[in-house]
Length: 76
Image (tube, rainbow, N blue to C red; front, side, top):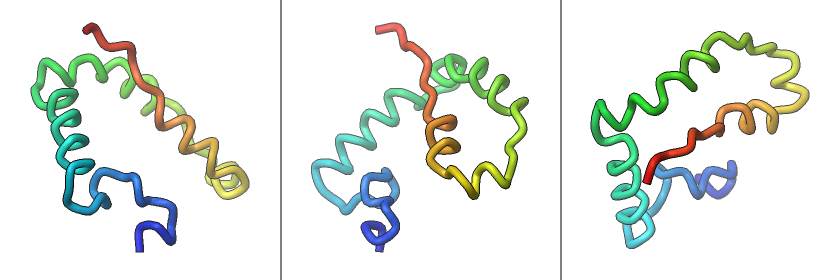
C-alpha cells in the first residue's frame, strides 16, 4: 500500500528489518531528548509563521514537501 502512494521510504511505513532498525536508531539519536530537539525550535518557529496557500499546494504539492524538509546543521 505504501508503495502505491509513494510513501515506501517513510519511517512508519518501512517493513521490519535492518533498514527500519537503522532508521529508528538514527531518529532516536537525532530527536531522542529535549536537548536534541532545541536545535529544531528556531526552524519550527519560522516555518509556523509562514502561511500555507491551499491553492498553491494543490497546484504544486512538491513545493510543500520541499518546504517541510528543511533541516538545520547539526553539531557533530
